[in-house]
Length: 354
Image 1: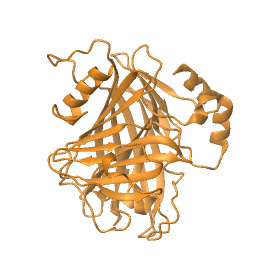
Image 2: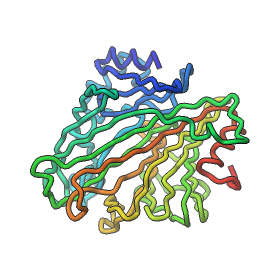
Image 3: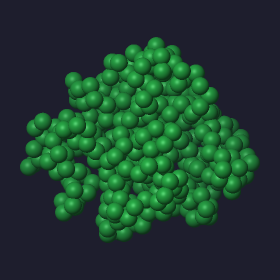
Image 4: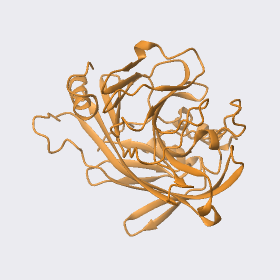
């Protein structure tokens, strides 16, 4: 952690370190409003993927001096619908642009009695309506104790744990409080490539393919059963899938190996199928109701696996001008046997073939 922190500071991007009561350390980068690092007590290994340029101060300086999107890594917040915010020529799909007002944005760290929060005030243009929408995004971070700490029969010896709670809010501001647009939060975690994303469901939930830049996802790499979607994220190019809100349980886990150690990163989040989920497939822009996505990237953008979830939208006809979202990240590292057992308990089910 210390080396990453020093490289960022030398590149002119200072970070904040949040030290939680259980010893978890959370590295927060205001540039981009990201949780860039998640570390277990007294351990150096980051559970998250970070851009290779951050491995040296000189490369980090060049990276942040460029006009390209600063995809630092970690846990970030975007906005939905994707077709409105990131495809400026929609329904044409030939241009994908990250609005700089959103990412990296102009996040400020604001001190308060209970710690600091990140705040970004921005305006985005929506491609379909051609309207500008003024918004405020706020993010706060706090502890998330090990969810298995009270469970009997769970052997946690030799297992490292780190976790945090993220509280994020989205608010329409000024004249945009009466906008006819709908817009929602979209939270995304980037993790090392090559692992398995485990997404439990209440009933069968067939993934919708959003895009594939190289070939297709092999059938063996996307396995759907009545209560689990298992995505082996190891393809070349860029591939993205999306899942419907109604069958989702509100939890997903990413299982990956690094050397002799195995890791599991679990995101615990709220799903409200009664809410208005406004993200849509790019070629079916009237099909609402998607809440969860996964994106496998092995391209010029880097090599990482991404888990994504949406919140119900605010704005026109929703009755809300603000939403508040609370989600946890629970991360474990240890032997394969212990981590697989934890994965079965928290996300995959006891009978899953892991």
